[in-house]
Amino acid sequence: MKQTWKNYNLSIVLAMLFLVSLAVQTWTGWVAFSDEQRVHGEIPVWFGASGYIWHWAEATMENWQSEFLQLFTFVVLTSFLIHRGSHESKDTDEEMKALLQSIDRRLRKLENPAEQPRAGKAG
Image 1 (cartoon, helix red, strand yellow):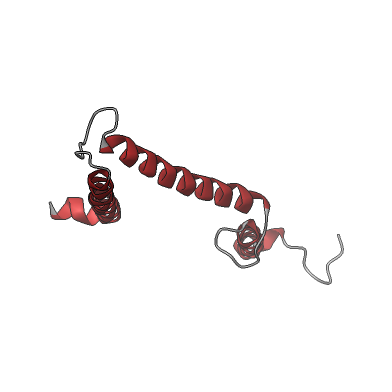
Image 2: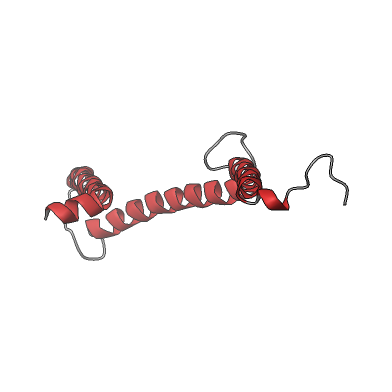
């Protein structure tokens, strides 16, 4: 169990937060739905043609749709646009790649001094 927690604690915490938020949404939605049904003189039910399940599904899908649209927009825009210094922006990757190539060239020069042209010697 300790190894599972150590290896997957981020996923476990996010899953728990998701389930708790879904449960809270379900409960608060049921309270509001049942109150509205009683105001209209109807008995609140979970299933059926006018059951709470339809209101719950609609609210859940609206929330998920807006979140996925937001995430999709963020991913697409960050793949094309730059915000200098942002971790999501490609400029940081390009700068890092250039720096690593520069370091690699310097290391190759240090590793192979025989290949370096010496000053003062003519060929």
